[in-house]
Length: 288
Image (tube, rainbow, N blue to C red; front, top):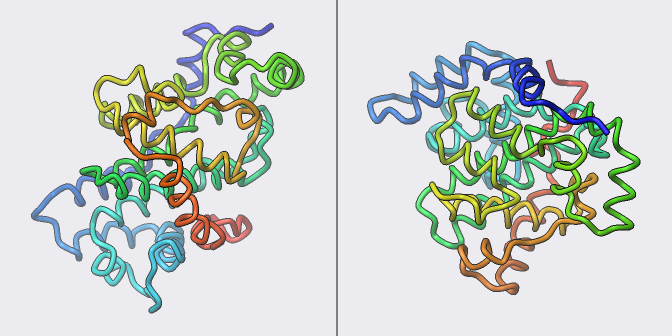
């Protein structure tokens, strides 16, 4: 079976374009206490397609405003800088994650729906346990599966054998992925995050979101994303191949410190939000 060498892996990561410059500029502005609403609006308005996607997300049920948000400045005032940073990242990543990922049994849009659902769930979970920065949980969960886009072509070649191993032998998906490919999608995702110059705690969370016990920079953040991913799997959103065998880490549950009843409440809280199509930007034909 096909094994990827480290050189081949790096080459594939190098094929991924860097995040658009506008994303870095928005991140810089939202972290600068001297930035103004006008500063942020002027940067975003330079990209008409991005502006349209941002306004659709801002008006989705997830953000909870009954009045229509019609301008970027209004969105910043009502939602705040941190939330706007999340929306800009989501609107950007939508174009990257929306493609079909056949190697993982995911049709067009499914990986995006799963990623956005994980981000929303992680944010709610982080707030429930009073984590210091729930927006970081949103970002990490949104990006957790970016490695699947790179490895999909190789997984497609091994699809049938992976399916047999998962269904008949009961192995964890990550183990099968490692044995067949030589790397798993989480490791590749971590390499992409490094290429994008994301902070070390986000790189770690993406790399170890299936193995939160390996995290050492921020095991709580990694655990929140891991549990959010599991909850979204339980809700049946973007299951794909790895939804067949997804063990929930007891380490992660200990880290977040909430019981099964509270986890069920988190799922209930977010399930109503996840039916809003605008929150997922699923009108693919309208995207540029």
